Length: 328
Ligand code: NAI
Image 1 (cartoon, rainbow, N blue to C red):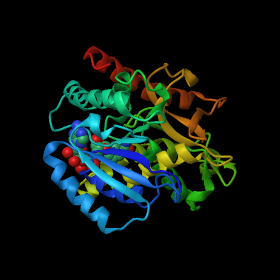
Image 2: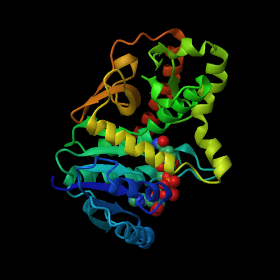
Image 3: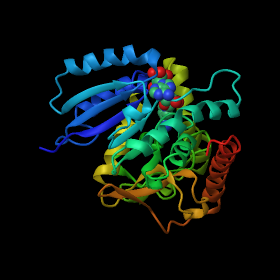
Image 4: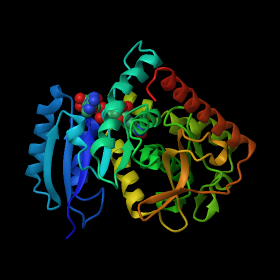
């Protein structure tokens, strides 16, 4: 068997952490042949809760779980990390200005970026889940100059999966029939879930739907506001589905997309599709051998162009704001 892969998870005692750790330990993140060592990072007040979760992980006797260490220090937690799942973040509280939110998250993602730079393994792959995910990823990346920029990614896979599920329900087909769905832009209400390049059973999805009003007034807002709908219904934000999406994101990155399909990942833009270079924006990507590539050559019509431009404009604003705060 392989030697264990070190997986660092921040915010390990939170609700996503609780849904995530058991799936990592049971082999769903990296596959059934890869043992994992968990390195959990929490704030000091939550270390005890993380220890409780670790006790439960022990009690599962997972064959692939080669060890659990718990830290309240980012440098230690990222030492030797091969995969980093950055889940812990500062949520927006009532009345909080955007600047305050970004600043508070800068206080988390700057030291974590430095810690990754200082001690992570050469093959480190980072997924930022904690919101605002795209911009938090940008902050961490800015403080890890020795790590290749493309290793910093942000999660839009939950939006991607939500969009697949909504489309499959609309058309009455299994989710496995849906391919080439794309989430463009920011993991926020401005995101653009794109059906014009998606396929349903080999057919163009927008044509199969044949209902522009549904697409504009139903599908896009339902996907974009699903997080709020979950909070409204559950009384807490999405956790198991977010954890599942994090598993999917890393699993796809490591193991590759299927032939004839792609996925959505928030990644540093190389300027493709007019998205300013450097911002971390969601794109259609294929993955292979642990690397990803933006799907090229898609024709973008006026409707999609306007939607992409709007979500990208928000990302540029966020970047400028964190730049203004000296966080990048
Ligand atoms: P939670 O509040 O239950 O847990 C967050 C945990 O992070 C807490 O245990 C807290 O102690 C910890 N934490 C805070 N600062 C930390 C630091 N500096 N280092 C290590 N740990 C730290 O929140 P939940 O529900 O688990 O969500 C986590 C984040 O994921 C939130 O920012 C949420 O908005 C985001 N999210 C992102 C989604 C996406 O699609 N990208 C989907 C759903 C949630």
